[in-house]
Length: 324
Image (cartoon, rainbow, N blue to C red; front, side, top):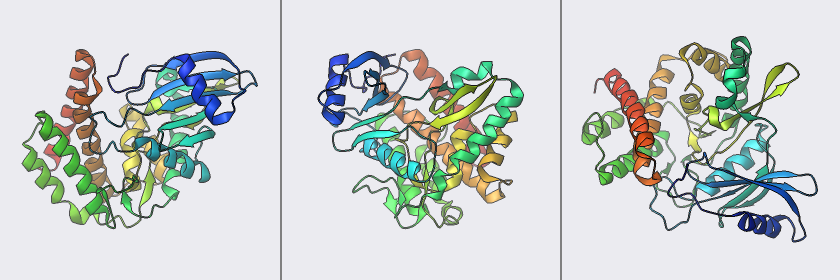
């Protein structure tokens, strides 16, 4: 699948990047390009010394992106470095160049959960969901200096979560308005609905690290004997510092019977009414991102239509729940 903003690199380009980062004398025995990502280029290389690595390269900085998509490779590197230090299972980070937009990580042994789930017995899948939630909770043990996105000079950073999150909402709504993309409700009414939730948002007082993209494509599992085990999380370019409850948005993008298990693993307790309402706000934010990114990714028409329908249907339900 070709994505308009994803860098186009051949094997020689990728080998040169790895030699420049890890050693001029390195030799390689195999190469594979991953084409299922929507932002960075990702290529796997097998090294003659036995290592298997993945090279990620960010889009050109001159491209038209969304307002929050500033220095996303730097964000991902910070998510990796701080997540790994906190014990989050993630691939080893061999090289990090936030300025150049390049990172090199270990290639994992297993595969993405969304590809494997059809082969996993239901009882094992529920055990995995709980373990995945518990491991994802380790991100939230990391505390940021401020709320919001970590990139330098970003206006979506603040000392209060309400200020940071409402700036995040304002920017994505500005992107949508600039595109002329329709939402299920008028944009001004959507802005006012979010603004009315300041007191609810101000219940959050610690800026916790949130990966915010832990859907089954970014969760790796592998076989262990006759069963399955969780291996690691990948990616991290959507990460920010905010309410840890926001992590459940993507963790609960699963069939209904799996949602409570994911939440139980993550929280270890039922959600409060306030947390449920805040979670709905963060779900709406992600759906707004999915609406906005259709115009900058260069999706095929069918994929764009499917994504817009899913996002707008979800927004319709949550807007209605908030009386909008």
